[in-house]
Image 1 (cartoon, rainbow, N blue to C red):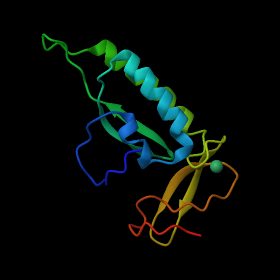
Image 2 (cartoon, protein in one colour):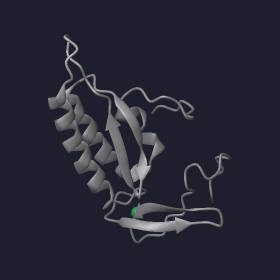
Image 3 (tube, rainbow, N blue to C red):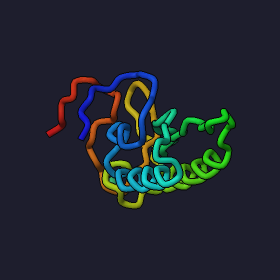
Image 4 (spheres, protein in one colour):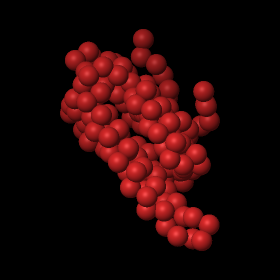
Length: 136
Ligand SMILES: [Zn+2]
C-alpha cells in the first residue's frame, strides 16, 4: 500500500499508484488493465486518472521510439484496453465491485454521478471533506 499524501499534481507513474484515488470496487478492473498495459509496454506512464459520469477516465502518455517516432501502435492498443475498462467500470459498483449502474448523487452544494449497486454504501464522497473522519 502506498500512503503518500495526494494533491493536485502532474501525474506520473502507473495505474497502481493512482488506484487508491477511486473506490475499492474497481481494484480488480484496474489491476487487470495495469497488467495488460505492462504487457504492451512495461514502462507505460499514465497522463490522467479520474472519473467522469460515474466511470473511470484514464489516459496514457504518448510513447516515442529511439528515433523520436510516435508509437501509434501502442496508443491504439492501449486506448482499446482503456475503453474496455472504462465501459466495464460504468457497470461495476465503485465501492464493492458488484454489478451496478451510474446513479445521480448529490448534496446541497452539488451533484455528481457515481456507479453503484443496489446496496446503500455510506462511504463519504472523496473530495467532499478533508477531515478524513470515518462515519461509524
Ligand atoms: Zn456496491
